[in-house]
Structures are given as structure tokens and as C-alpha cells.
Image (tube, rainbow, N blue to C red; front, top):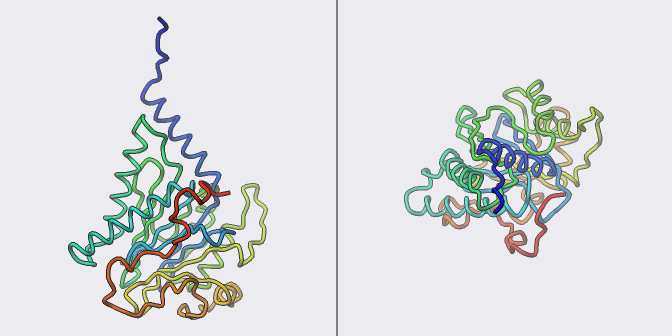
Length: 280
């Protein structure tokens, strides 16, 4: 009878962490930045169907890099948690901190379980406050730890280099156009130091805008509005342009909508087996 091969717990966890990091590194990077009127999410994403950014609840946004089918399951779970808690208690009881704790427990349990592989995902949960001081941004790596971020955060394959670039250039009180241009500059830098051009058509951009009169602060920026912001000379173009919002997101002016209506409308991505399982 042969002796079973022994691997120390420390080595096993290190191998699982390395496996998850390699999977995340294959995904395209994304950045989340604070600006004067809220929080902006920017990522390179040529797909119009598979979103990196989504709305979780009134003031809460979700961003993820890594394997698509895994973080989509987490997104749907977060939406269900938020809707149930908001319906059972009060809408103000749904917070980014509470959602981050739920995600941390889920990721931590999966990472430490020997029965399944770790999730190849890295998440960002952000909540916009009534004032800039109330903004919250939490980064959740594959192992379920929670990192409280301020100002800017990058996740994905080239996150370390992008984070260094953003830390040197990001400042409080930036306009939306300035923050968007900085994010695109950071994403366009390759690991070897060269820069490339990322056209507006390959960008996915969304904001949590505290100045919106609607209860729901999440809105996607697409089309002509996105191009105007990229071409703006330091000023911020208006962020409420219904003609430039895809799928009608952000156009609901009701302050008494039902909790279930706060989910991000991505019907084409929720079908499970018919979508691709990872990012290019």
C-alpha cells in the first residue's frame, strides 16, 4: 500500500492563492475612482452583453474582474441579499459594508474549502454618500479579505501598475471628465511601459452620481455622452442624458419603487449555460 502524498496546509493554501491570482490576471483590468459628484467605474470591455459593472441597490455599485460566470453568480446573490434586507427592514439598512461582509464570507468559505477550487474573481463594492466623505469603496480579493479603499482602486491583470499610476495622479474634487480621462490613461498603459489607444466603443463606464434626483444613483454612460466626456477640456458634461443611457437604466424617477426594481437589468447574462465562462 502506497503512502499518500502529504502537502502542508500552508503550501496548499499558497497553491490555491496562486491559482486564483493567475485566473484573475487573465481578465482585463478595471478602475474605480472617486470624483466630486460620486464614484465612476471604468473598464475596457468590448462586449455589449457581459457587463463588468452593475447596480446592486439604490446607492451601491458592483465591479468585478476575473471569471465571468463566477462573479455573475456573486452579483445575483448580492442583489437578492439587498432586496430581501431592504424589503424586510428598511432601504437604508442596505449598505456597501454589509454587502462586502456577505461577499467576504462567501469567498472565504470557498477559498478554504478543499472540496472545490477557489473563485478566480476580485470584486469592488462601492456606495456613494450624500457627501464625498460618506463614499465607501471596498475591494475583495479571491480569499475573502476586505480592503477599505479611498480615492482610487484597480483590480484585474495589471492592477498593481495601474494602482501606482492612479495614486500619483488622482486627487480629491476631480470632475467626472477629469476622472474618466485619468482612468483611461491608466488602463491604456501596458505592463511593458508602452501606451495604446482605447476607443470609446471598447470602454464600459458607469457612475454612482450623488447629484441625481432619483433614489437610484447608478447610471451607465454610453454613446455620445461618453465621447463628449472624453473630449471635454477639463469640464464635466452633464451626466443625466436619458438619450445616451442604455436599456433605460437610471431613468426611473419614482422614489417609492419596489425593492426588486433596483436590480441591474442584464437579462441576457443571467441565463447561465449560454454565456461564456470567462473574459478574454
